[in-house]
Structures are given as structure tokens and as C-alpha cells.
Length: 259
Image (cartoon, rainbow, N blue to C red; front, side, top):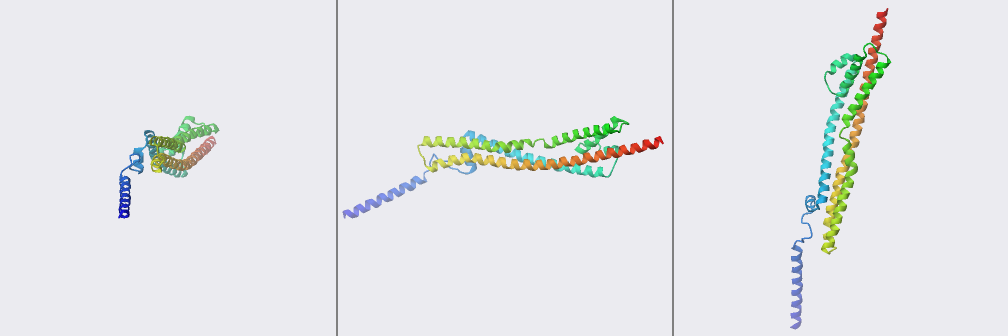
């Protein structure tokens, strides 16, 4: 009889302990974040880590904005240059080419008007000095148009080179705070350590998300800019051919008039 009572008491204690453990498991731990989604980790992160994440998100937005704006601009300007080159290949005179350009502001139109302006200032002087002055004017326009088309792309190189380090700073700061929290809670449980480290590593992930597209887009825009610069060189060569032809026609007219 006594043995049966001991067995009943032991079974009761086991059942009570199991119920107690189950109840404790269902009670939320105030030391642990309740939402481990990226947004939840952002909201529970330290203010410094939050500032780093916001800055990296803004840098990523700037990267894609520059990509969209420069891609559209390069496509538009490249189309205009190709159209002007087709016009120049038809062999119009310098004055006629300038008349066809009108008041347009594209790069080739400015090259043509600059050469035509030098021709009008030089008057009857169509010698080698005129060609040198025209080439200088054309080179100045080419450099100005290249600077304009590359404006804003330098920030991509800055983002690509600094974003990983900014994210690493956020990670170091977050891990430091996580270790401080471990010390204050006097526990080394992985369940307490892991969320803080995950929040810190989120900053590094955002840094890579900002940096990788910035580097890829910068290289792509650099290739497109080089192709655009080559087209401007072709257009400048066409303008110099027109100047050479005009110079030859003028020489022939002068020689016939002298006869």
C-alpha cells in the first residue's frame, strides 16, 4: 500500500513538472525580440544601427535613381549623335550643317556651330591656323559634353567603395551592444545572443545590397560613356572633313578667279 502511494506521488510530481515547463515555454521572454523579420530587427536595433541602415537604404535609392536618369540621358544623347552623324555623312557644307542644327543644344550641334563660328571669325583665312583653331574649339565642346554626360556618376563609385564599410560599422556597433546586453542579463544562452547578432549582421547585408549594384551600374555607365565619347569623336572627324572640303572648294574658286 505504501509503495503504491509513493508511485502515485512520484507520478504527480512528474506531471506537475511537465506542466510547469510547458507553461514556462509559453511565457514570452522579455529579453528576446518578438519579431525577427527584417523590419522587426530594424525596429528593435540600436539608434546608431538604425541610422546606418537608413543611410544605406537611401544610398541604394540614390544608386537606382542615378542609373535610371543616366541610362535615359545616354540613350537620348546617343540617338541624337547618331542622327547628326548620318546628316554629316551626306556632305553638306559647314554653313548648311549649322543651319540644319538650328538652335538645338545637343553635343554635335554645338560642335558644328562652334566650328562655323570660328569660320565666320576667321574670314578669308582658311589656312592651317584656321584648322588648328577649329580643332581647339571642337575639343573644348567635346570635353564639356563629356563632363555633362558623366555628371552624377561619381557618387556611384563613392557608394560602391564606402557602403560595405558603413555596414560593417553598423555591425560592429550592434554586436558590441549585443555583448553588453549579454553581460547585463548574465546569461550566455544562444537564444539571447542570436537575435542581437542577427540585427547587427543586417547592417552588413544592407551595405552589400547598396554597394554591389553601385559598382555594377558604375561600370556599365562607364562603358556607355566611352561609347558616347567615341561617337563624339566620329562626329568631330566628320566636321573636320567638311572644313577640309570647304577649304578645298574655296581654294579652287580662288584659283579660277585668279585665272
